[in-house]
Length: 123
Length: 170
Image 1 (cartoon, rainbow over the protein chains, first blue to last red):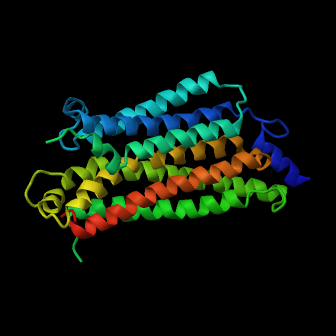
Image 2 (image 1 turned 180 degrees about the vertical axis):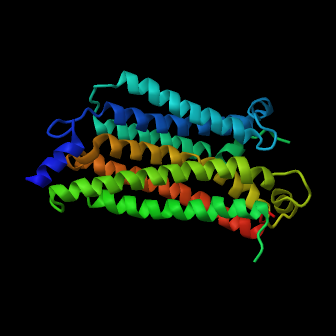
C-alpha cells in the first residue's frame, strides 16, 4: 500500500496517464539537428576559406569555436521551437527516433575527415 | 610526480571527466536495461528511476564539461603556432602527421555530438519518470542513443589518448 502511493507520488502527474511523446521528440530531433549543423559547418569550413575565417570567433580556438557555438545554438533553438510546436502532441516514437538516427548519421559522415577533406580546395 | 598547469587541465579533461562519464554510462545503461516491470516491484521502479535520472544527467553534464574544457582550455595549447606545440610537432613529421590530420580533426568535431545525445536521453528519463517503465519501446531506443553517445565519446577519448601519447600538452 505504501509502495503504491510512493510510485504515484513520484510519477504524478504521469501515473496512469500516458504522457505525450512530443517533448521527447523535440529534444531528440534537436540533438539530430545540432549534429547535422555541426557536420555541415565542418564541411563548409573545409571547402571555403571565407567560411573558415568567418567561423573563427576565437583566435586561440580557431574555426572550431564558431562551428561548435552555432551547433549548440541550433540545438537549443530547435529544442525550444520544436518543444513549443510538439507540446501536447504524440508523434510516433519510431519515426522520431529514425529521423534522429538519420540526422546524427549524416552529421557523423560530414564530420569524418576523409569525407570533409575531399572538399578542400586543391593547392 | 610533477604536473604542469596545462598537464593538470589535460588530466581533468581526459581522465577526470572521462572517468566520470564512463562510470555514469555504466550505471545509466544498467539502469535502463533493467527498468522492466517484470523485474522490479513498484518500490524498485521508484528507486531505480531516481538513480537513472541522476546517472543520465551526470553523464550529460560530464560530456558537456569534457567538450567545453577540451575545446576552450586544452585545444588552444594543442594548436598553438609555437614550434613545440603538439600540433606543430605532429604535422612536422610525416610519420605522425595523421594523428593531427585524421585523429584530431575527427575527435575535435564528433566529440560535440555526444553531449547532444546524452542530454536528450537524460531529458527523456526525467520527463517520463517512473512511467518510463510503461514505455518499453522508448526505453529501448534510449538505450541505443545512450550507447551511441558513449561510443562517440569513446572514439574521441581514445584518439585523445593516442594523440597525447604521441605529442602531449606540456
